[in-house]
Amino acid sequence: MVSGDLHWSTVYLAVEWVIRLTMLAIVPQQRSPAAARTWLLLIFLLPIPGLVLYGIIGRVYLPRRRIEMQRRASEVIRLAQKQLPASSTAIDLPEPAAMVSSLTVALGEFRPFAGNAVELIAAYEDGIGRLVDDIEAARHEAHLLTYIFAPDATGTRVSDALLHAARRGVTCRVVLDAVGSSRGLKQFSHAWRVAGIEVHAALPMGSLRRRGSRFDLRNHRKIAVIDGSVGYIGSQNIVDPTFIPGYPNEELVVRMTGPAVAQLQALFASDFYFESGRTLDAPASFPKLGATGSSVVQLLPSGPAYGRENAKELMVTLAYAARGSIVVTTPYLIPDESFLQALGVAARRGVDVRIVVSRHANQRLAQLAQQSYYEALLDAGVGVYLYRPRFLHAKHMSVDDDVAMIGSVNADIRSFSLNAEASLLIYDRAIVASLRGIQDRYFADSERLTPNAWADRPVAARMAQNVARLADSFL
Picture 1 (cartoon, rainbow, N blue to C red):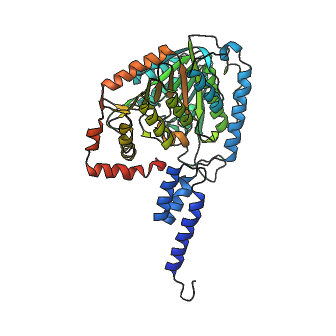
Picture 2: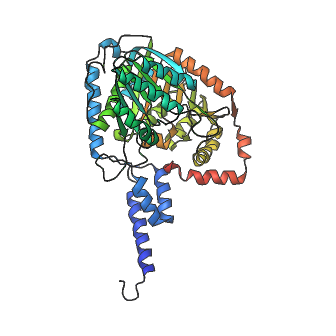
């Protein structure tokens, strides 16, 4: 009980101010100024609900066990690469690719590998069909890591291929994000385990569980490795293209053979180790891989366990290194200040900077926040293209004629800070030219925004976009 003249209202007011002042000291720690402002605005307006929300999603927190496992996984990668033939890793790249490659090694441990055959697959059904064919042809192992594995026609097709492979003696291992693939895990896990397929949920939730994770820290990677010699990486989940009603998804996938497939296998092995506690050290997992092509490629993993924003640092560096052109394709464009500034500076010094995003969105709040950045980009001279035919879910960046970056990373704060992601750096002018052809098709099927037309948008739309932008740290 509160005695005397002290009323509950006074206690409540005092608690609110204690929360405000305490969080004023806590929130800015290890956080960008923009994110800190967003959280402090919420907490100062609604102290108690803001404190509760901050406790749930405000801290980019991983259990110490996962951080230690990441350190061990990185050490395994370094030791494994020392055993590779010098011809696989002794690469003499021209600038700026050499500088980009050096930074990628420092960020993610993987060196550039030569002798790879790289194929870009832009048609949705072709990406799924090629993966199914490779699983059906597997002799030893089939590994799959993805964010969404849905219990629909596409998911059933891939599941059937895994079941067929397992029944003929192929070792199959599947790691699926616990949230993104929750329905698929529920639908397929029992049949998979009966058939001998090993399946694990990545980043399971639950604060009281030893392996529990915050619900918004997700494994967003999309990787497949067949017999240790065929690899897939890109933006495509195992789900029907129309899984969100409206405009079907359009993706971009890399199918690769050659020495660098070992890097995809190592990243899968790392995530498999996180969830199972076991390493993959059988000879079948890491066979000797000879040259199959002429492409030099390099894998960049990223995620909160690294303690830095690997993908963002590399994309910012790519923007500053560009001499002639930059093309960024992303379904979600909610950049932090450093990436936004890098694109603007590049445009102002004469680089042809273009961004391709979907005209039609599958997340309205994210689209509104995204639109709030268009004016600054247009003012800096950046071309903003709104893709019309489908929901463009592909995620890639090209710089000049020298470097392409393709994978699962969106150009948004969530991908940069919260999600486990994977990107492939490709140093091959022929492949970059092929990507340019895909990008030219995007431009042809897009509406290009003009500064004057965008400035004339309704005041109500402008207000909604600016309000949504305040929540950019939550998106």
